Amino acid sequence: MSEAYMKQWNEKARVQIDERIERHRKGEVVLKLVDKAGKPVKGASLAVHQTTHEFLFGCNLFVLGQLPTQELNTKYENAFTHLFNFATLPFYWGDFEPNEGQPRFKEGSEYIWRRPPPDELVKWCESHDIVAKGHALMYNRNVFMPDWTERNNPDIFLKQAKKHIKEIANHYKDNIAIWDVVNEERVRRLKPESGHKVPDDYLTWCFRETAPLFPENVELLYNDDTQNHDNPDEYAGYISDIKENGIRIDGMGVQFHLFSLEARDKYLQGNLYPINQLMTFYNRMLKFDLPLNITEITIPGGGDDGAIIQAKIVEDLYKLWFSIPNMSGITWWNLGDGTAHGKENKTMAGLLDQEMNPKPAYEVLDRLINHEWKTNEDLRTNAKGQVQFRGYYGVYKVKVIYQGKTLEKEINISKSGKNHFTINL
Image (cartoon, rainbow, N blue to C red; front, side, top):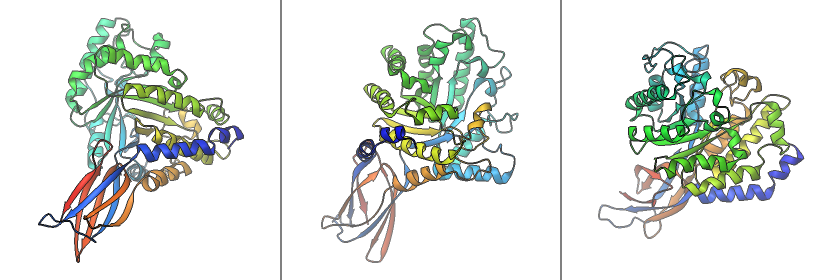
């Protein structure tokens, strides 16, 4: 790594990141063991094992079942479930409904690369206990829109959009937990000719129309591109517009794509998204008291020593993001080399190679997510029948052994919970 990179990611910065992770990602836990009479049980052995994270570690699921062989598809699925508890599902309108009135909901719908039918993806997520996210209800870029939608008459287009949003909500409001309501408004405003003509209040219109269609336990996010890190005030303005109009918004999303080796090299030299600039953006978003998500990540793995460089960048950025107080999820974009969109494949930015074998960056995330950021403890109850420990938020299995008897119980340690539990023998 370059001297400029190491100067940014110095020992002081790393210590601060580790301290924030300890402070924001773990909580104090008290377990009390009592007998049938309600009296505390002293000297019992407890094995505490974390099974899942509350935090969402994810990836897009765009090529599920679409690789050339069954072996590759199986390796893709195994690699996904081993690392992730969160999946982004594609709802690009142009591929979701290429023919008006014929949305591709169902399994067995016409094959489109990187666009499996959503019903198939939802079913897979449910069978693997993976939280699903829809991306996106509205992405107003001509290249991702159906040919039959109205480009030049805003009134007609909004009627079409309203029907589209309602149809998806009716179908998935109970089994997709999170939605990007709008994607990349910054780009649309910067280049209005790249999208369909819409009124000035298009962003708030989308959230106003969407909010009543989904239950409160479904999170409605605004997602935008990497360049928002350059101008946090602009991004904050979008969120303020929605909130100040009294419209529901449940979370924020921002991407982090380095789509070329040149961009990666600029990043390594500290000339693109230095750590202080990233922190400025994330700290600026704290004022909204909303969850923040890194929604799409591309870090090139090509070039000389590219896989090793990718792994180092991934480790440092994931630690940084995991340390941000209001961060609730981090989503890698394309899991395997060769599964990205068009020219994005040139930089070999997958966590897996084309044979779906783990690259160093995947192994780094495995170490962090499945080992360093999970809590496992062997404890013994005190005179009050209690054990105390500090653990990462998530679901745990607790195995109790006392006087030759064994009891197992599942507990959920939550950032929003008191995390005091009583186990009855």
